[in-house]
Image 1 (tube, rainbow, N blue to C red):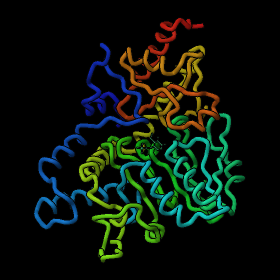
Image 2: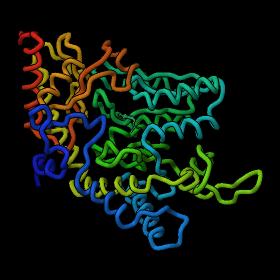
Image 3: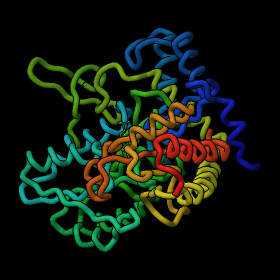
Image 4: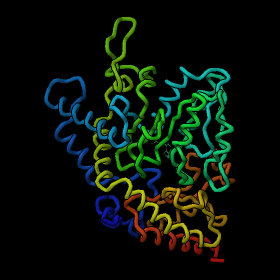
Length: 412
Ligand code: PMP
C-alpha cells in the first residue's frame, strides 16, 4: 500500500491546529518529533492503571509496571535487532548514552597518546564528551574531513583511523546535512585497528531500519523523542562483553547486588547501569512509538521521506539565492534539509516562516565545528518526518518566496 502522509497526520493531534492564523506545518522533527495518539494513550494508560515503582515490589501494580517496563526493553531490542535485552540500556537520551560510553568505556580504555576519531559532522553531544575524555587522558581527538557535498570523506577516514585509535565515534545520519554514513564499512575500518565503534543514531533510528548486529557496531545511542516517543528516554545499545567489563556511571538503588558498609557489588546487565527509579512511563511511551513505527514499516517510512525530500529539493534549489547544504545525491540522505537564502539571517527567515504557520529551525544546530566547515555561522533547517506531505513542501517553498519578498530581496 502507498504511504499516506495525510492519513498519518491525523494520528497526531498537535498537528491539527492553527498557528499565527495559518494551519500548522511542522518541519522541525530533527529537533523533536510529534507524538501520535497511540503514544499519548499508552502513557496515560500506564499512569491510570499500572503506575508503581519497578523491580522492587511484589504487589500487583509493581509487577505490572515492571513487566511493562521490561516489555518495552524487549520491543527496543527487536527494533534494533540486538541479540539480548542485557544489551539494551535505558538512558535519558542520546546525549546521556554517549556520555556513558565516554565516561565508562573511555576512561577505562583510553590512555595518554591514544587517539579518538570523530568527524566534522558530529552533533555537540558526540564531540564534547570526547573532548573532555581526551583532555583528561592526554589523548588526541582527530576529525574525519567531509567531502565538498557534505559526506564523510572515506579517504580521510582511512588516514585518521590508525593503530593508535581506541575509539571511533560517528553519527549514522547528520542532523544538519541529512547525509547517511556507511557505518558498516566504517565499523570494519575501526575494528581493523582494534578500535571500538560508537554510533550516534539519534537521526537514524527514527527514519530507517537499523540492525546493530549487521552493522557490527560496539555501541549505538539514540533518543526516544525524535522517534515519536516522549522526552527523557533514550537507549544505549552495547555489546554484552563490553558492557560486562564496564563500570556503571551512576550509583545508587536498583543497580546494586549487595551493599556492605564500605563497598558494594553490582547487579547484572542491563540494570547495572540503571541507577535509581527509571523513566518507566518514558520507556512504555517509547515502546508504543516503536509499535506505531513498525505498523507503518520502517522501509516504507524511509522511502516516503526520500520521496518527499526528492520532491522538495529541486523546488528549493530553484529559488534564486537559496543554497542547500549537504549531499547532492538526494537518494543517500534523509529528510533533513539545511539551507540559507541570500544574506537573509536564518533567524529572520524562521520568524517569517513562523508567521505563516511553518515551524523550521535556525541556528548552528549544535554543530559549531560543522558550521565552520560550511563557512556559515548559522543555517535554516527544515526536517521532514512521516506525517509531512507534498503539500507541506509546497507551503514551505511558497513561504520562503513570500519571506524573500517581505525582506525586500526580490526574486532575482
Ligand atoms: N545526535 C544527533 C545527531 C542529534 O540530532 C541530537 C539531537 N539534536 C543528539 C545527538 C542529542 O540528542 P538528545 O538531545 O535527545 O540527547
